[in-house]
Image (cartoon, rainbow, N blue to C red; front, top):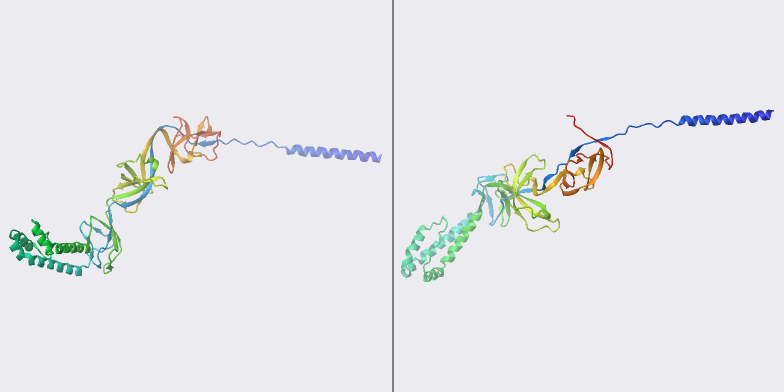
Length: 371
């Protein structure tokens, strides 16, 4: 009897454990939470194909169209002038910019002039006797001769006999020696070839100037040129005289330039050609960095979009019945920020702003401006 009771008790305990375990398992099964599906809002615009100008953006630094470097062709001490020889000073055309002490050279020139004058005087008796018809013109030449002024041109020789006589007396040689010294004397005083500004001064008054030494740089600040590199494929589209729009890096100031020269050589490394743009504006300075927009050609039946909207530079997202569709497009031209593309029909709704996490077949909602 006791054995039977023990068996029954054990069966009851096992059955109770099974029921309890089943109860725990059933209570563990909770209903899955339901989440509302999130549909992203996208910005779109309708495609309107039209003629898009292909604008090549390039850049460069301005250089003065008229610029010269002052070099010393003579030696001497730099003399002070009315204006300090310093960068930033402006000069009118013909105004003295650099003066080098020429006292010793000038004395030598005067000595040569005096010798030349005396040489002519020494032949006058022979001219009176042998060439009486030519005497008066030589006498007039002596009368017009001023040792403190530029040596006048020799009288015209009328015969071979007179020419041989004058040359044999060394008159021609003495004359050209004097003229050579007069030309060299002018190199002691450098004058402004045009109205401009001194942009570089490498010597100061009192310093010794040597032959071949660079003294400074002088520019005309009214006209500038900019050298730009253009892809060789547009070489046949650029023409001399084309108007070019220029602007600074911040795009706060705009200028107008003109293509004045196009290099006929293509750079073998970069496959670009050099174009030169002339620009005139009172606010510009040499060395200013500008960007140029060159209109090369136009593409019909195309649109211009941000490069951020392109996928692998050859696909774009459009919206069809609230579903994103990734389609192929035909890129025509790429700039730094935008691209000109073809292949979209008029009225197609394309994304106007990038959508993070976008994928082909994604359900979206088009943003509607209630205003």
